[in-house]
Length: 221
Length: 224
Image 1: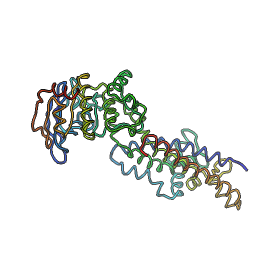
Image 2: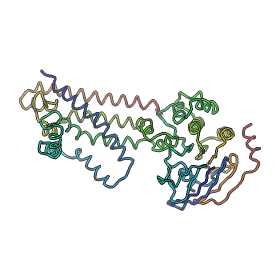
Image 3: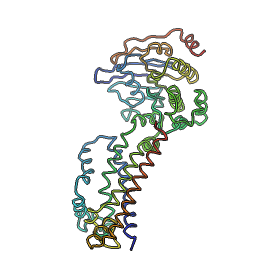
Image 4: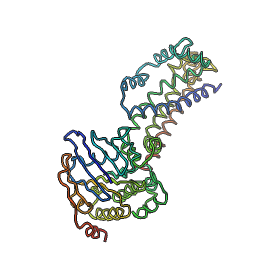
């Protein structure tokens, strides 16, 4: 479970959010520049709050002895908006990079249907394939939480649907908390168990998505 | 005709290049990643040999490394090393004049790629050292390689500071640039021309190789 209470002074406004996520998909929905990515960065350790606390299960990310728990000790899977694949490594090397078990690498490559791309470089594959490689790379580290920063924003409608299907399928297998950031309300409703509306750094509405199972089946089948 | 000047020049520039490459790379890495008090002052000091005439650099080195100088005294008393009028003097001069070139190339190299990639590696539970050697270093390699070639070229062509610190002692401190100068002084233009052509070929080959190699290594993972 992720427990999060953040306060951070940003240029335009103050970020002040409180979130609790069980093993579910929680969507942070809001316009661009509302502080969504900053929340993810604070959880991953790429940014630091001014006040508050971040705790994942029994592990306190912030504050801790060294002010903030080092990034690499957080066991966070982070899928960046632009995927941030290592351009000098093949797909296989990208995915294998932080892997704890070789067997899992092959399984995830197979599950995400990217095993045939393993010898290609990131610039040689499509946006949808890059997205799946980035997701595979985040998952092989066996993270305790998955952070997804607008992962589908660069994809066309058909590809988006396909990727939703993959994400939900993986969520069922992995059952870890997922925090997804988007400014697409349809996407938020298609994927999230909960939608947290964020604007100017504040949570303005907490929405529980009903009939989740039905919609998920619709997407998968 | 002795080829000793060529061997000495190659030895001095090879050692200087290896030393400057690693020192310049790690200094640039530190300076490009961290802000600390006095950073601007230190950086200006590092770059000073670029703007100073080599003779001034040589004079400062001579002041520091002579037997009674601040560093020369320590080297002499503790290790029994004499730098002045020794090939080590040529090495120190090459290191000092080439260091800013490597430093500048490495600084540019470490900021030339998407800095987020290092953070990505860290989120995957990888150590800082592995992140450096597997992400930062290969992505910065084209710039580092340029610095390496510049360092070698600057070291092999170093003259002014070397003359001040190591002097010209045939068989001991006669690097190729020094041999050319003293050959012209003594009217031996054929010898000077020979060594000049050797230096031109060495420099041209280094630049040609650099261009070829960097294009080859970059096209592997970048869009044409």
